[in-house]
Length: 295
Ligand SMILES: [Ca+2]
Image (cartoon, rainbow, N blue to C red; front, side, top):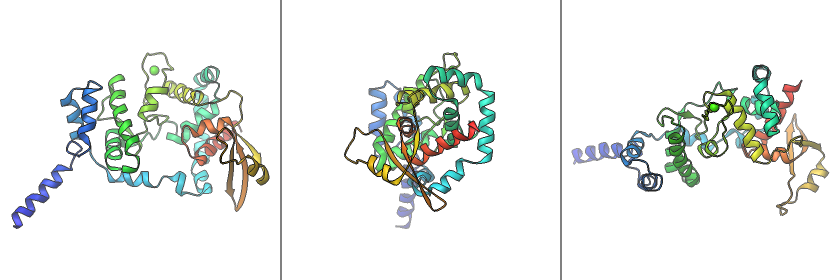
């Protein structure tokens, strides 16, 4: 009796040590093999190697954008070191940034602000293996499993297309990669080669990262010389707020600072930034940091 129980424990831990034997894996493996033409032995090997990480589930369950106050969030991103390093980054990459401004219509300060908020200009690109993130969230995070299963498939495609080693690519807990933290579907759809070496490399090429962020914003509605936010008042903000008017492009915003509500109206380019990260805090932080670079 004791022996049987012990054996059972050993077996069950062996079963869930990797993603090959997860009940939902079979269908994804089948799709990768039959629809996308991957070798079965390769895909199975990758799933055997993929590891569930509870920390990933914990992190996605409480993102800073939705649990922090605006003041705490702002303080994290609008600070001296990030401002100083951003100004330095602009100087070092001025030619590429000017080229991106010209081609995509996105100001250099906005591109660099996104790089600063996402990865401190490429310094922190994430420490989770993307294969672990996407299997963990695709197979063990039911609330968003459809989304992450799709990203997992796109990650396989991305690594094949760009000749990347699927085991060694690292990123955020949500599988965002490189300088600008692109998820697999965005990498495949919006990343561009901007240094002309015929390779789209968001891990090592600063130029590709700059061009890709600018292209992403342009595709998602960035208007050259358009507005991001305008200062407003409580009455104006209420007027703009028409919950049933889906055609209204303006977003009413209020941010509490020092116990005081500050009102803004988000314009086209605010909306474009929220396509990068849907949080209003995020888009506002990008705007503020970009303004700091101009000082
Ligand atoms: Ca390139």
